[in-house]
Image (cartoon, rainbow, N blue to C red; front, side, top):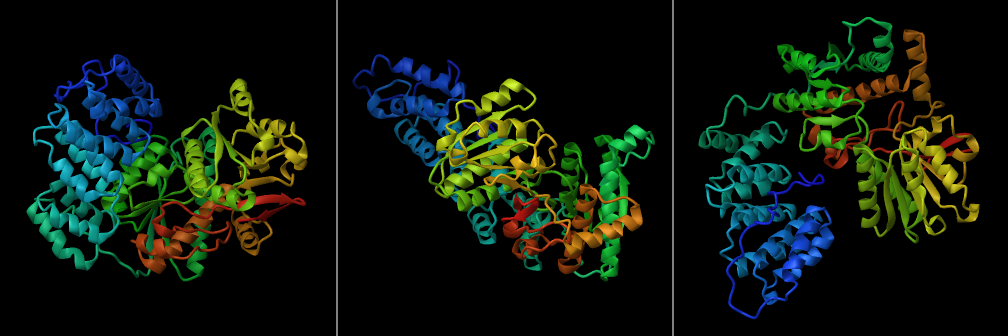
Length: 568
């Protein structure tokens, strides 16, 4: 992996990278060609991919008469893949294979070209290209590349066409069997194909036997895997884990509500502790495999373990708190209850285009961590895909005063259409308003920021309620709405304290997924993909349309007259 980008092979950029491919005797190359080549390689090594491509691409042309033109073509193609410029990479690789067919690193070329074809969803060409690699060369890399990319195929007819054209490809066959069984795509009509794959490629029949699907049961079992840490009764642990207790209390109240509605759900709580060792012991318990739905855990290391378990046992698993969209990639049995930060970025960009227009460029500033970077990347991509422009994208660390100051330094705010600041750190809000208030009100750009700022005691209502300030608020709920008031009343009767945000989330999550079990059965992925958004009892609602595995409902709100108004 380089910069989050899957690469077919690691480019050989050292001083002995490859050998000069034989070329026709011709006029001498320009005297500075070796220097330019070394400069291009240095750019590539330093991650300056645009400069590397610009430097290496001319040297790859036959007219350059450069002895290492083939190497320049290959390294230029690597730079293009880092930039995700797939057509440009393909052109360089085609040039290399046509003009320099005896290039000694041709297996690496074919591997990279297979990746480029995969990225362009030309799966047939990709498989044909990879089949040209000699059997004894790059076998693990080739098969891993195929296994990774064919998972992206969604269309059943595409799968069947590829299986007909590549009948002896064991990796392709196993991937399709995985899609049918652990991927939730299996129907009774797929039985002959699956049986044929199992027999032909000696697949484990026990593993590839689909779990019976009870689409209509009278009651469903839900396993709740949370770090209760019951073995440690100290007040410090109990206080630290109050959010877990609140989350479970919300689940229990939703269980009662479902029961009254005629949807009996049985909860089975498992204490996963604070380490993966305890979680592994829980996953080893045989009864867990009989659950219809799994909820948990809350820590990322455990989430990955449970996600694998859910896939292997064909049980939908819902992560209650995470906003990391990577957790549910390529796993049809794993869902996030809330929207990922990437989904928040995409939805916020759509709102910005409609609210602010695309006449002036926007600015994105975000906290220097993985989830907030995912927000910024998704926002920029969605905003620019629809005709907008992002003039600046900067990351900062709110705990370092110099970093926070530098994020706002030198910004041309009067000519900026809007500013997005994505950080839950309590220092980010005051720094943002300080920078914006240096501008005259008439020239002050609109601000889009997280809903958590509404609870920041360092910010006053005059700042939060300014006319051009908007909040991305996935956890927004209306305290005056009948649904929340009824929930709050029931919670108070049982717990003797008002519900926390975690209790709200636990209640709404089980209410939604419990109802989904009764509506569609335990393997409800395909049904959710086409289902209309569902209004929430507490929050704004839930939607997993289009095959999404995180909630697509992301409210954008504004504070007006001490009241929050939902704008989206």
